Image 1 (cartoon, rainbow, N blue to C red):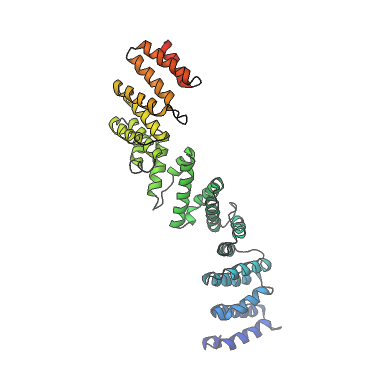
Image 2: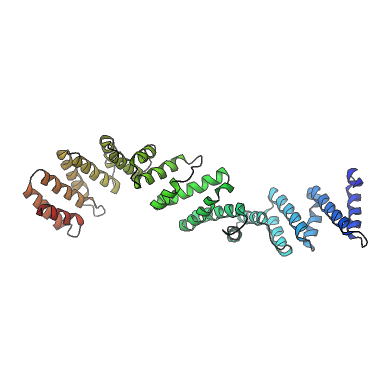
Length: 362
């Protein structure tokens, strides 16, 4: 110890070696000498690396072996020596009863750096065991597995790992929580998963996910028929996608704001495609419900003119049924029968044809 105080490390280490290997030295002094010798090697940094590797390669006791292995792996990680990280962890696996989770996690990251994706995933899967007592590395490993599955297009697999990571979100950094939330949002929105959106809407929103949160919460509220809440969340994201704009319009209508709802549907109807067709139809239906019969009829015919030839849209039968309803409202029974017959001829298996036949009979 005096030699240590005098910074004569080689002399101190030599004496510690003599004490540790002495045959008539008390066990507690041997232990202390071995601890000091290893600590000196650790303190020497790169200069003590060979001695630490020699100790780990021998027959280390579990406690000291784990400490030495952790130090070697930590230094190799900090110095970006990925091959050394993997090599040290593999050696530790043959010398220690169990590889500490922190070391296995670093080995997995090193394997990713070395493009050994399969090897990294195998390590993460061991760590991500939900029954693991080490929830920190289980959570982070689940997130890493989710990222790999998500990037590879396997969203169902990613969803399972993301749920595990999200359940342990207290172990994640802000960046990790944000990544998990954004992936979950994308998966549920992409699959139009109502249950998934309802779940995520109930969860705390991480900073940086404002747009995804408004979309998720707005659509979940719309599906739950909580129209005021849906309006509040969707108003800032309605322009981002047709589904959100349509849900925003429906929520406005459900909240009793018919003029605003019509404006949203008119905007959407000015585009093309199934969403535009459905919007055009909703404009007609809203006018009909509001008693604007002339406007309703004009829009129902607009739908028929624009979309009836398109076999990929299902709005034409609904529009024809709407015309039948308008004609009956106007007392034009003969016209209603003719339109109903036309609907039955063009779309004999449609539920709208059956509904129109029932209306005219009554």
